[in-house]
Image (cartoon, rainbow, N blue to C red):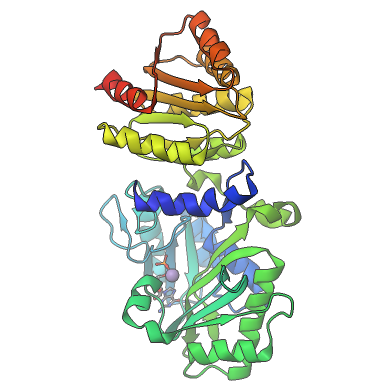
Length: 421
Ligand code: GDP
Ligand code: MN
């Protein structure tokens, strides 16, 4: 299957498969302005800024915050990067603009409510419901800084590059030697030597070395104390007056720490997420939305992947990855079915269950209950095998629902494709 999906899966569900827990690995992603606010609390230099959602608020912000400024940076507020090089569906180029203060209103009007497409949003883009107005700094040097969790050293890893601002993937390809990596001993914490190594990697031209070391240490402190999984600043920049500032912010947090990071987790913005995934997350289902037309309900990540492959093989495309898990409840099955039927793109549903711990009769009852609650407008192909398969089949049969039964995986995929083509 698609490599992107595989990566998504590896990071989301397969990495926890070893713990055989029926839970997705989800990471909270917060907006740049929220990240900047948090960094500021930790003594990291950030530009002054305010997020606004209407022209009235733009006017007020200009008056209150940027009155004596010549220019303002106007940034589309979406939960994705690559905004600078993005394109609006309206045709407007660039999701980040630097404009004269008296033109902010006009530009913000062209951004608000529009869809911005970047390398990270996917072709459907994301809606710009707010713009982030930022103090324009004269940046004389743009560098790259990130802290992430490293599998090899089993701890935080700081990545720095003396060139930044553009995509780090391109930098890594063009200038691999400029990228330095400094692993931090999570028990010992960051030492002055560690921080100095990072600063030498950034190689600021004018910023004070000791002050820069302090900034790096502050960023590390924030990373650890907030249970971050990623803190990326691209660019971390130098201003004409030799200050190091975080001119962008991407912060992700470990969902397993939600219980002790309540303030941060309140910032989750579900309006920027795939609504199907938001609903699935609430029901604790392993769900990833895709663009195809066959909705899949499967138990087990491996079987789900195989099912998607076989759908492809027989000329269809999956609308989603959905693993209801090894011991889903009837209620979860109902929720799963609702998500599939609510998706306009879904033209057929394929249920493929191998009953092991999961019992076929539970799945069958879930399907029947869901069918009572939602109007079934598309054909449903069901393949059940394993524990309690006879009870399962009987429940489906006695329900009177118009279901298409299948014998094995190939048969099921072929029938699902045929059902709508
Ligand atoms: P991204 O494209 O989503 O990563 O958005 P950024 O926040 O990184 O903004 C894109 C680019 O705008 C940055 O890489 C900078 O080159 C530029 N930029 C952002 N803020 C300022 C600023 O205050 N002054 C100047 N001169 N450039 C800025
Ligand atoms: Mn950036």
